[in-house]
Amino acid sequence: MSYKVKLEIFQGPMDLLLFLIKKEKIDIYDIPIASITQQYVEYIELMKMLDLEIAGEFLVMAATLVHIKSKMLLPQDEEVEAEEEDPREDLVQRLLEYKKFKEASEQLQEMYHKQKNVFLRSGTYEDNKIVLDDGTEYLEASLFDLITSFRKVLKSVSKETFHKVLKNSFSVSDKIHEIYHLLKESSRVYFFNLFQEAASKDEIIVTFLAVLELIKMREILIVQKDFFSDIEIVRNPELVKK
Image (cartoon, rainbow, N blue to C red):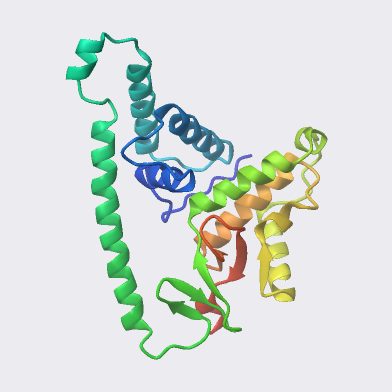
C-alpha cells in the first residue's frame, strides 16, 4: 500500500480523546485511563495501517497516556497517595480548556452559517445540519466517527476474506469512480454497504482510501442521523447546486 492520504481537516489528539470520552459516556473528571489508552492506541494503529499521515502530537499524547497509566498502576503508600495529586489532573484540565475553546469555535461557525444562509435553499447547511434537496436533515459526522465505522467493517469481515491475497485489479481511482456511480443511482449510500462485495483486505482498505480522498476533494460528505449512528455518504450539496 503506497497510497498516502493527507487530510488537512483531520482533527488532533485532544479531539480524539474527547470523541472517545463522549462515545463511551465517560465522566471527564474520572477517566478510566487504562481503557482510554487502549482505545486511543488502537485508533493510532488503525491510522498507521491506512498509511495516514499522523502528526507527531498524536504520538506525544499516546506516550502521555501510557505514562499516566503506568503511574496509576504503581503501588503507592496510602499516606503518600493522599498527598499527591491525581496523575490525570493535568490531562483533565487540558481537556476541559480545549473543550471550552472548541465549543466557542463551533458557536462562531454556527453564527457564520446562519449569516451565510439568510436566504435558505434546499441542499445546504442550516444550524450545523446538512439539509438535502429532499428536505432530509443530517449531522455531519467527524472523521473519528468514520474510523469507528471502519473498525466495525474490519471486525465484520471473515478471516478468509481478511487474509485473502489477490492480484490488485483495482485502484483508489477505480473505487472513486465506483462511489460516484453509486451516488448517481442513489442520493445516499450507507458506508457499510461499500464493503459488502470486497474480496480481500486490500480492497477494503483501497475503498476506504477512496472515501477519504473524496472527502479531501469535498466531493462527498459523511453524515449520520444522530450522534454515533450509522454513517451515510452523500454528494456535497454545495457542489450539487452548481
